[in-house]
Length: 85
Image 1: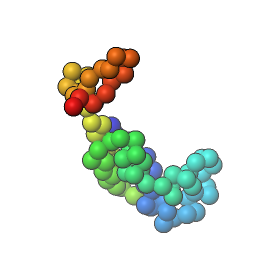
Image 2 (image 1 turned 45 degrees about the vertical axis):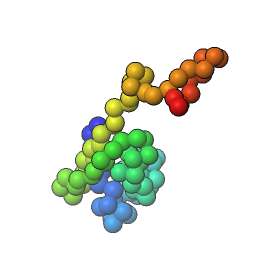
Image 3 (image 1 turned 90 degrees about the horizontal axis):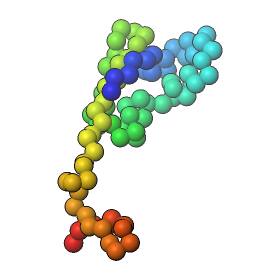
Image 4 (image 1 turned 90 degrees about the vertical axis):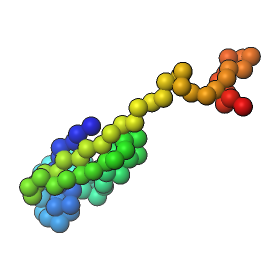
């Protein structure tokens, strides 16, 4: 995944910019951390790079989900999967 957005670090340092734009979530965005949000969403290797003064590009990799065939589990008599012993 690749996300291009305003530079959080520089927006924090120039608070006056957040007053100019009438974007409803800009203060929450500035106070947050896109790398942490990507990690919370399950992305690995999240990394943010500054692009000029105004922008940042964040990338991350969503891990491949294991297929059912590769999972080690059994199904009980009620059809509920349970870890294999």
